[in-house]
Length: 105
Image (cartoon, one colour):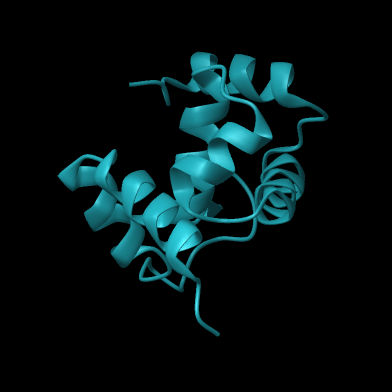
């Protein structure tokens, strides 16, 4: 499906706003270890860890989706999985757990 000129220009503009590290992370997404435990910090995928960092940074689901080039539904799915893996109920408790565990940059 073709984007069309206006949507292509918008997509290119969004892509240009990312750092090299963000672009590399986008292309490496999904290439994390597959032998992770089912719970705890070690169980998070690279994409889930990125979502945690962005949540802790105060970004909304929409802002996270734009930063990661995914839909808001995908962000919600990541959050649902993160909450289950870490045993937290919401974003505030996630940020608190990240702080206590030293998972913040």
